[in-house]
Length: 372
Image (cartoon, rainbow, N blue to C red):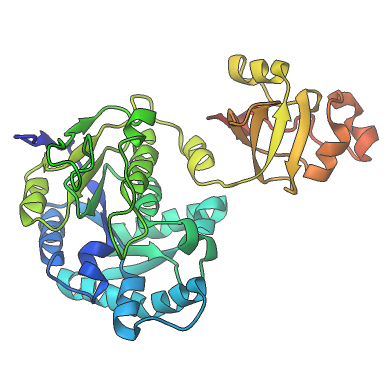
C-alpha cells in the first residue's frame, strides 16, 4: 500500500461528488453515517474562504427506501422514485450543511445545447458569488437517456468545467485506483498518482461496485479524463473514511490524484469533444484526412464519400476514413444529411446549382472541428 499521500494542488473552488453508496448504504435508506465527515470538510473549506459545489447521487435510492419497488417498467419506475427521493436527498444535505443551499437539476441536454450550457454556467457562477452552496443532481425524473446511460461521476466533471473549478473530488467506497481489483486480489496496490489517462489506465477499471449506484471505476476514470483535459486535477478517494476527508482538509490526497493535461483544451473544444453528442457520421477519403489532421483545414464536400444518420445542419457528426471503424474527428455540420448526400465528392463551386441556394462552401468549418 502507499504509505504517504501526495499533496493536493492548491485550490480555491472544488466540485465534490458523493455517490449513492455513501448516502444510502446498501440501498436501504438515507443515512448521515458517512455524510457527517463530508459536511465537516465542506464547512471547514468554506470557513477557509473556499468554494465547494456538491454533486450528489441518492435520489433514486432515497425514493426506493420510502416506497420500495414499483410495478412499472424499469425506466418509468426509476423516474418516479427519483421524483420522490430528490427533495429528501436535498433536505438531508441542507440540514447537515446549515448554509444557504440551492438545488440545481441538470440533464445532458443542458450540456449539449450551447445556450443552456452558458445559462447553467451563469446561474452557478451567481450562486457562488452570493455565497450559496449549489447541490447538483441529474434531472432523473424526466431524463430518459441519463437514467439509462448517465451517471453523476461524468456529470461532476461537466460541472467542474462549468464552474471553472480548481479541483474535482469523487468520493466513493474505494480508496482510489488500484493495479488490480482489491476485492479479489489481496495484494492489489493503490496507485497514488496518474500522470495521463490512457488505454492502459482504463484497462484497470472493473465493473460497478455498488448495489445502488450507476457508476463504477470506469465512469470515474471517464470523469477524470474529462476534467483533466480541461486542466482540472481530479481525486478519487474513500468517502466513508473520516480520515480520508481529514487528509483532504489538510491538503493531502488519500486516494488517487489524476494530474491535469499539460496543454488543456479550450472551452469550446472541450464542450464539443465531451458534451456534444454526435447525431451521425461522415466518411471521408485519405486526402480529406490529411487536410484535416496535417493542415488544420475545413472539410469540403469534395472529400466526403459517405453519410450516415439523419442529422440536421448544426448537429454534431463524427468523421472517419472510409473503411475505418474509429472516428478521428468531430465537428458541427453545416448541412443536413439529405443535402450532403446530394453533393458527395463535388467541388464547392457546384453546391449552389446542386442545392438550389447559396450555402457555406464547407461541410464542417475548421473552427467547428476537433480531432479525437
